Length: 377
Image (cartoon, rainbow, N blue to C red; front, side, top):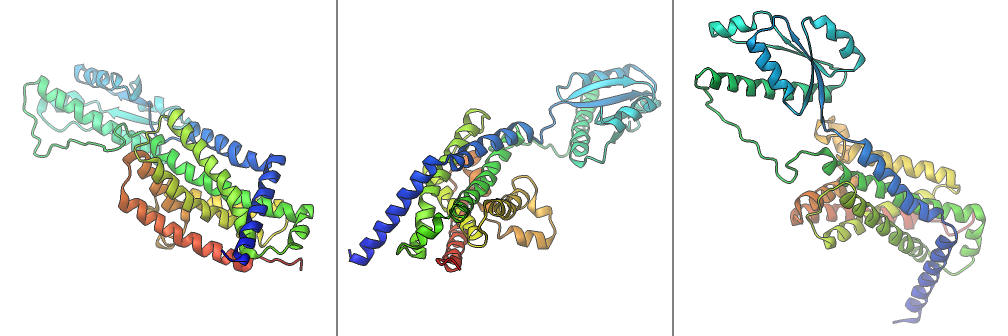
């Protein structure tokens, strides 16, 4: 090894050691690395869910009969519904407007007469369209309950149910359709993106605010050595944040982990380089911790929240936003985490995501090295 290369490695080791001591003495970096993931993961885990566990509905029986009683019993026995009964739909208008119930089912007065004549027996379902997700859940659940009741009626009357197509749904990887199991891996991507960018952005800005950057610039350290010295200790903090988040997701929130630790570490390492490089890029433009934290949050957490596909469906976005989502790094990390957690090690998915993240990381770090100023002016 040449003397120049030995000197470079010696300077990097010295800067890494200095950063580790500074992190140990100033707990703010440890708070960002470990307290933020814990807090955010608890918020996402307990506060974010798309599951409709119990749907409160109002059932209007305009003319009670044995047939309407059977339908009421079928709904009441379902674990998905909490049913209140009335004879007039006007009794449920105010509760639906106030959000006390999610839908109204109206069984018309000629319901039994239509059944006796062999005619179709329509019911009316009214839902709150101001919340499209809940309205879709209510409509779908009630449609399923209605079809089950019709089949039971046919069997009770001795008739044969005509069913040219029978659908037998099976849900792979998440058979209970718990939204939390898909949301939490995506949340880890958003958390690591914010934590990684904040760590490096705040540390460099702190150097400028405390005046220690001048002493650092007085040394013969180069830009590449400066970037490496900042990346290595914060990379280890980021991996620690990932470990805490994954353990919390598996142990506390019962998210299955079907992939391998090696795949998780590999993809996370590439993604962390993107997040840490983004923070260093921010720090090359500003010199105060307040401005660094604001810009880092703006360019890392918000795009990850809206355009990673963890919460909002990218395919439903306009073309221009889908194009923007293609360059958001968290999108590829979310794909990898959901695959590793719920499915396992699927090489084509993981390799494609890791390759895209590696290209983005290389571009950001190269641009950061070019923009980093090693002078006071």
